[in-house]
Length: 205
Image 1 (cartoon, one colour):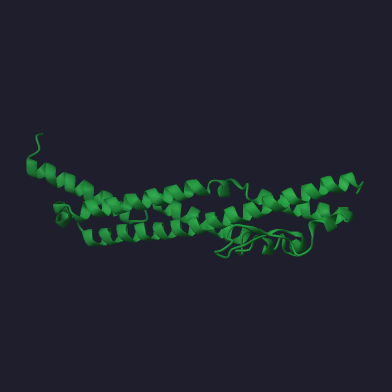
Image 2: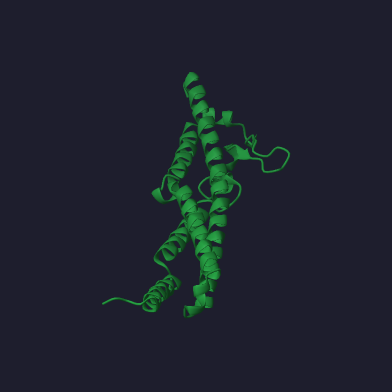
């Protein structure tokens, strides 16, 4: 049976309308990304509850012996010496071992597969937000939107999804920045304690 141009156009419009209605009902990719990014944000916020890494619960009790991070604009990114010289640990092998263990345990938490994949999550959020905006733009400027039921609702849904994905991406970016700060402080202190270990060995401690 041969279809007329009018019938063919009607079929295409019906298919397009159905596809867009499906897209507006919590698209799988959107829902998946929002759920996973929320889980990741909660995990990072639990792991890094403050902007000062040495004030994290895992390290707070050893604060006096740890290098911290200067956040002021003038000396941004530089390390500040611990309140108590790390050389005092030469004569405290038990405490030295305890601090090093706490630092390494804390560092291991950053090796969670979900946290390691944080950069990919950020890329996925941005790419999907861009895709939603492109869908919105194409539909908005399409003459056929007038033939699609609830086109204005679909347009609003696409714009809302794009904005929500952007917000998630911004939160992830802030946490990535904080994660790098934490890792720098942890690595600096592990290096420092290992140096004290070497010095203590020279003094037979």
